[in-house]
Length: 248
Ligand code: GLN
Image (cartoon, rainbow, N blue to C red; front, side, top):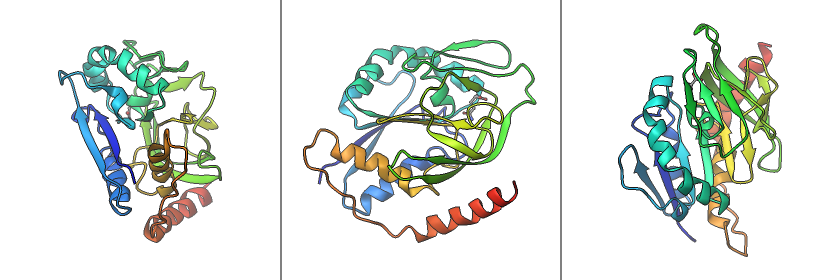
């Protein structure tokens, strides 16, 4: 079975609410199946990597200040990331990372941080810092081919507009905008979401969708992933779903 190579960008700056834990989960789920999983780091002033040599590029979330700090450096990576995405490298993006792949993010003070413009959406935060979307969130996605209820935690001022292909439908919480019905952005090789948590901890199907995508990319024969015992993860999620959906 082949190995998976991941590039984790700006882990020292964009790592809110356990976002780096997503890498632990991907590593663990690969290790349990005998898949070799390497996670390289990239941050400001690292040597320019060959983005196309990775199977998955991951960027977590961060406060406005961190987003400003990394924005010039991220822009230097634009061409490489764009090329990798077009070649089918998977992009997994959380909150601040999600926002910066769109056209721009305008923060609460009106500062505009240019995004890489890979996708058409844009994000604007209201001028009042009190108006944030904060709390537990449940969405339903069909990315795996079957409906899956995904649980996470959101905390963002940014309201993301013009999303044509959302990651999921909001069952509880806010999503792309305050009280919206749509959450995140997706394509076959993109999951961009506001869900922290870390997102993958309670949602094993989403991890496996990405692992399966990565190991099968470019191969004629589809390798099925060995099933793991996810009873703990699924029971945790069941508790959260019961709590959040019955509160409504
Ligand atoms: N700073 C951005 C916002 O407030 C992103 C926050 C985050 O990554 N949680 O919208």
